[in-house]
Length: 410
Image (cartoon, rainbow, N blue to C red):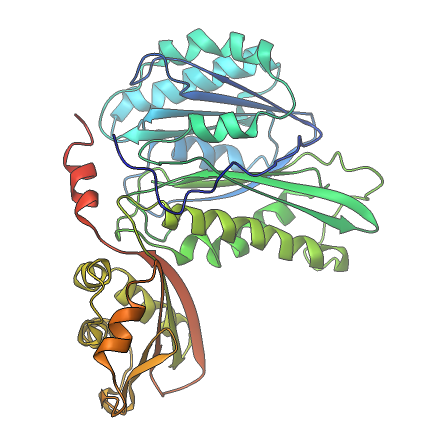
């Protein structure tokens, strides 16, 4: 059994019920017996939705379904299963999404275009639509407010703990709730950083506002993390807005000043969930931030930062407590972005290890090696070329990552 991440929280955070949403969890026997592996969330009429998905050219059938449904901007239900990604399953995969959405729409009493689907697990194995159809009615009959912790656990695959986050913010003097859950531990890289995230608010957002808000928030959070550099076929982030917050007028303009606090709170939720995914990276023992500054642009800074964050040899050095700043230099050089060797400066934490294109004259191997034993590591690179700055987050690469992925289908 995989060891629980050392970063696992002592308990699941308090996620209060969101008015206009009900949840049920069940067992469809998709991969394992006697395990909750399917979640149904039902929303009140009028709920809007925005979302963003993997940029993989081999997306799952559920991603294709959601992309099509998103155009309508309305949602009445979300069905999520773990144990099978329903990806690379050809026409069978498409038939399964069609049958699953039809089953949910019948029991909820809505159009199939208002049903959203997500699947996570093994790629290339057909997902038995009959197993989904066999539990939908029972799930619907048990739907109730709350249940966030059980839902977060039911969508886990190689995760070692369920991930949730919640914020309360005021809009026009009234309280609005934002809840989110996510899953992910491996096959994590940007372009929708195998991860799923579902965020629900009772704020009255139009579909266009919800879509814009989640897109911008994802860029600063889920698209700024990596565990192993691999982009999943199934990555999905959806924001549902039930509009049930009391005494809050509808928000139809992204420039509405009432959104300022909401934007910050939404960013806090998505970044919290993104960080939890990295801290639960398969086999991870260290949480690593990589900041690149002095780049010619933010885009360039991000590309260099990911060159470091995705470097297997650098991540292995971090796992071994090795202050190998030469591997940082390597990763900067291979990024393909503007860089000047003789202007480069590097820090591990507050310790400057290199400056002016060479080792810092005050460099101390003992001091830096002691810092590398921490479970939270910060690497900073100054390119000395401009004002572009960005930060991404990753984890170390351990032997356990290989063990987990060597027997994933066993």
